[in-house]
Image 1 (tube, rainbow, N blue to C red):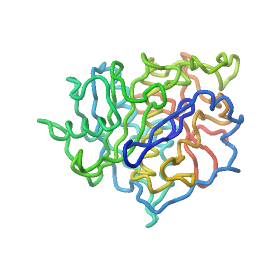
Image 2: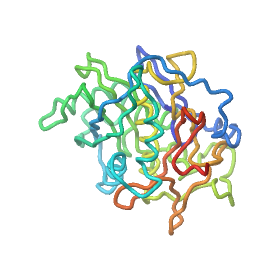
Image 3: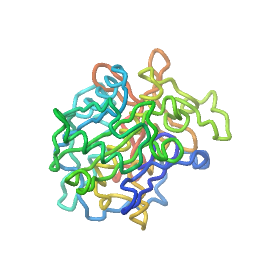
Image 4: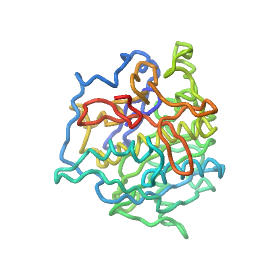
Length: 334
């Protein structure tokens, strides 16, 4: 589950580190070949017989820390856009590529992703610095609190979002988000979950690319390229707009590999390359090598590649299309 901004690899430990992690190294993106999105020569994405999220998804948000209502509204509208009509190319159109993945019964990943509940952990129940396992403890707090979230082991998916002032283990240094599944010893049942942090103040150049430039990339931002360089955030918040692409990345991967035994490339199940990892840094045709690809700009010059509800516009990383055998999104030119 790569970070959909600059490169990141998924790292996880089945024993001590319960999470597929976006771990990205800035220089890797700049060493990738241009037009990577058109290449399939070295990709060996395989199905390992595990489940995918084929049942309608009930998505639950846990807002950890202090959140601005406008930030929450932008993220909600993005999540509403998965199952709601919007102008083409839409978030729902982007999700159609994810839906191509099936389980061993031939059932496709669901097209129904519904925001079914929210919980605000504004008291920072587990402090301002979190380890990987603390994310599961936060879910436990949310489902056991008065007027908390339901514990849904059947079709629940939990999304933990940490605010600008919360530090998470390896956040900004090696990861921007991750997904995994909960341990019954902590949460009570096994449920898939994902975590994404707000990077707007801590590391926008790492986790909010292409709306900010990596400080240690070793190269200046490209200029004069239609699909390169720094773009203006479509919703006016570099941190939130960057988060949205990471959220999309994580939802795609947790849906296609919820128990870390379904769709991924590589021979080592402890270090899988998942369907969004294969396309890190690619947002449009020709993307790769520090070039985002051909994307749109609105009348204010803000970059985007998909439309959402209420006239919203978003920028999300492409994912691997198993039929075309390349990275793909609905804004593709071919």
